Image 1 (cartoon, rainbow, N blue to C red):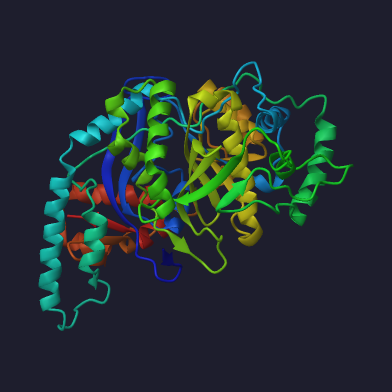
Image 2: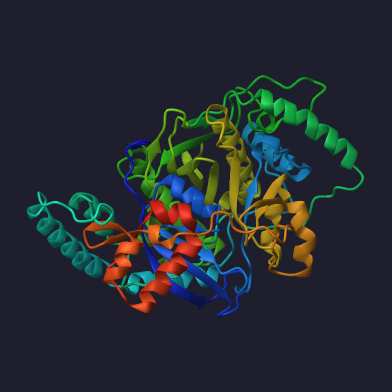
Length: 521
């Protein structure tokens, strides 16, 4: 795990232009449109800045919907866990879990599961099929050989003086081969991956906020004070047994989220649930030892919930999608004890995994990536339950790392009824697609009722403060050297190449363009 001060740079490969493909939400065959890039490696700070500009990852593929052109605009949504209060339906899910654990009771009625990603069965099937057809390894072997030759040549001339300070900053051969020669797409490969299915969707009961508004506001104010004081004892980063019980809230206060989750169980409880946080790394012994069971659960989930045929949810697809992350694991003195990076949050019931939440822990948030679970336990509403656990986990991390205070739920799609449920985790904000500022969802909904695409920032004079202002400062990785785009473009006079680089700069913003290395060949 890299230390905060010794990070290797992000290396990305941008796929110029936009592409139309089948929408996983409305099923329009050519309605979905996005820009994308392959992240050979990425720092958590760069990814944090990218998702704050509307990007999102699927494995190592990082994409950004073309919001004013795509059929179903996807707005980045974040919940504010420090002020979050579970709704009546959320409390029902938590109580249902407690009854099952304590007495083995199985509640009757509808399952209220809510996945964090779309049910895009048909769209997903084609993505991995496309990736598998590409001769990725061959392309990257050639790419790696070219880089090695260039680096060897450079080493021979290493003592010679450099003519330009900003033109040639060498990267070690081992670093490049590790990130570019890892069996992933090279520049000759264009892969557009749609968002993956994950945690379900149910919109049967939107929150009612009329008659009880005054009482709810009072409760909210009380609990905001309570949250600031911090009542998150007993929540462990690596292993979170449900039976551990923090101090009870005062009798005149409503129960906090943690009180509801960690309510004590009888000694003779019927079941035992543990939540384990496991780094996504085959070098981690716990991840490696649980891989087979986790993969089997994924296959069962994909086939039962999304009707995927066996050949489309194999070990290769599982690894590329949920076990292959571009994020570099990082630690910081003031960061969370678990560190930053990608993790599997495994739900162990009586010694077996029944659900896995894939999350990214970033400098300012916990970002939900995907959830897969055992369909035999659908009655426990594991989509809702895992989201509530992830909110509680974010609050726990905030205790030590104060800037880590948000829970990102992926995309909110107002035009898709099955994806509107995310707006029920209040308070929450939507990202303005033009100025990239956060706006409370209550202020956005009236506009979304009138139009699929909206600019949420009401200040007509406001602009994107993080926009690309000096594209010549963009960092390019060309052959063996890092150089500013201003130097690179003197060597490459192809107008198509210039258009692609400028499009990339506009989408990632000035800060990321100066930190990340844009690979060109």
